[in-house]
Length: 109
Image 1 (cartoon, rainbow, N blue to C red):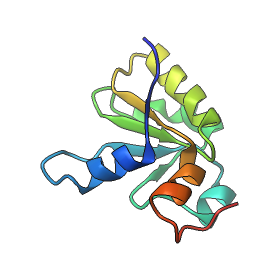
Image 2 (tube, rainbow, N blue to C red; image 1 turned 45 degrees about the vertical axis):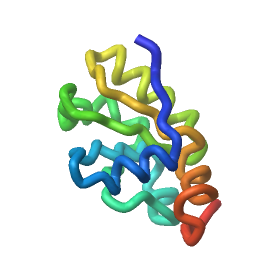
Image 3 (cartoon, rainbow, N blue to C red; image 1 turned 120 degrees about the horizontal axis):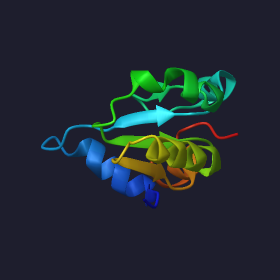
Image 4 (spheres, rainbow, N blue to C red; image 1 turned 180 degrees about the vertical axis):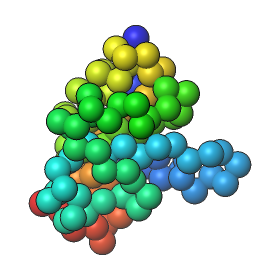
Protein backbone atom coordinates (compact mmCIF):
# COMPACT_ATOMS: atom_id res chain seq x y z
CA UNK A 1 0.00 0.00 0.00
CA UNK A 2 1.38 3.37 -1.03
CA UNK A 3 1.62 6.20 1.48
CA UNK A 4 -0.80 9.03 0.80
CA UNK A 5 -0.18 12.73 1.47
CA UNK A 6 -2.51 15.45 2.69
CA UNK A 7 -1.86 19.15 2.12
CA UNK A 8 -1.96 21.57 5.07
CA UNK A 9 -5.00 23.35 3.56
CA UNK A 10 -6.88 20.04 3.15
CA UNK A 11 -6.05 19.10 6.74
CA UNK A 12 -7.25 22.50 7.98
CA UNK A 13 -10.55 22.01 6.10
CA UNK A 14 -10.92 18.55 7.65
CA UNK A 15 -10.27 19.87 11.17
CA UNK A 16 -12.85 22.63 10.64
CA UNK A 17 -15.49 20.21 9.27
CA UNK A 18 -17.67 19.41 12.28
CA UNK A 19 -19.45 16.62 10.39
CA UNK A 20 -16.20 14.65 10.19
CA UNK A 21 -14.37 13.14 13.19
CA UNK A 22 -10.90 14.58 13.71
CA UNK A 23 -7.97 12.38 12.76
CA UNK A 24 -5.17 11.51 15.17
CA UNK A 25 -2.47 14.13 14.55
CA UNK A 26 0.66 12.08 15.24
CA UNK A 27 3.66 14.40 15.62
CA UNK A 28 6.85 12.34 15.37
CA UNK A 29 9.36 15.16 16.01
CA UNK A 30 11.53 15.46 19.11
CA UNK A 31 10.21 17.11 22.28
CA UNK A 32 12.42 20.19 21.77
CA UNK A 33 10.95 20.71 18.27
CA UNK A 34 7.40 20.21 19.54
CA UNK A 35 7.96 22.88 22.21
CA UNK A 36 8.83 25.44 19.49
CA UNK A 37 5.60 24.91 17.54
CA UNK A 38 2.83 22.36 17.12
CA UNK A 39 -0.53 21.88 15.49
CA UNK A 40 -3.19 22.22 18.18
CA UNK A 41 -4.47 18.85 19.38
CA UNK A 42 -1.52 16.85 18.09
CA UNK A 43 -0.07 13.87 19.94
CA UNK A 44 3.70 13.87 20.42
CA UNK A 45 5.32 10.48 19.84
CA UNK A 46 8.96 10.93 18.75
CA UNK A 47 9.93 8.77 15.78
CA UNK A 48 12.37 6.57 17.73
CA UNK A 49 9.59 5.65 20.19
CA UNK A 50 7.02 4.54 17.58
CA UNK A 51 8.01 0.83 17.71
CA UNK A 52 7.72 0.90 21.53
CA UNK A 53 4.42 2.83 21.57
CA UNK A 54 2.65 1.45 18.48
CA UNK A 55 0.12 -0.35 20.71
CA UNK A 56 -1.16 3.07 21.84
CA UNK A 57 -2.42 3.72 18.30
CA UNK A 58 -5.60 2.24 16.86
CA UNK A 59 -5.13 0.60 13.47
CA UNK A 60 -8.74 1.64 12.77
CA UNK A 61 -8.11 5.36 13.39
CA UNK A 62 -7.42 7.91 10.69
CA UNK A 63 -3.89 9.07 11.44
CA UNK A 64 -2.01 12.05 10.02
CA UNK A 65 1.76 11.76 10.54
CA UNK A 66 3.56 15.07 11.10
CA UNK A 67 7.19 16.21 11.37
CA UNK A 68 9.21 19.30 10.40
CA UNK A 69 9.28 18.90 6.60
CA UNK A 70 7.51 15.57 5.98
CA UNK A 71 10.47 13.19 5.69
CA UNK A 72 10.47 11.51 9.12
CA UNK A 73 6.69 11.43 9.21
CA UNK A 74 6.74 9.77 5.78
CA UNK A 75 9.00 7.05 7.17
CA UNK A 76 6.69 6.59 10.17
CA UNK A 77 3.66 6.44 7.85
CA UNK A 78 5.35 3.66 5.83
CA UNK A 79 6.22 1.81 9.06
CA UNK A 80 2.61 2.02 10.29
CA UNK A 81 1.30 0.81 6.91
CA UNK A 82 3.71 -2.15 7.06
CA UNK A 83 2.32 -2.92 10.52
CA UNK A 84 -1.32 -3.14 9.47
CA UNK A 85 -2.50 0.47 9.62
CA UNK A 86 -4.69 1.40 6.64
CA UNK A 87 -5.84 4.97 7.25
CA UNK A 88 -2.53 6.83 7.23
CA UNK A 89 -1.83 10.19 5.62
CA UNK A 90 1.43 12.11 5.77
CA UNK A 91 1.26 15.91 6.19
CA UNK A 92 2.88 17.27 3.04
CA UNK A 93 5.73 19.64 3.94
CA UNK A 94 5.26 19.11 7.69
CA UNK A 95 4.69 21.83 10.25
CA UNK A 96 6.94 24.17 8.29
CA UNK A 97 4.59 24.09 5.28
CA UNK A 98 1.60 24.34 7.69
CA UNK A 99 3.15 27.55 9.10
CA UNK A 100 3.65 28.95 5.59
CA UNK A 101 0.17 28.13 4.27
CA UNK A 102 -2.29 27.77 7.18
CA UNK A 103 -1.02 29.33 10.42
CA UNK A 104 1.25 32.21 9.49
CA UNK A 105 1.61 33.18 13.18
CA UNK A 106 3.24 29.82 14.00
CA UNK A 107 6.92 29.93 14.98
CA UNK A 108 9.25 28.40 12.41
CA UNK A 109 12.69 26.87 12.85
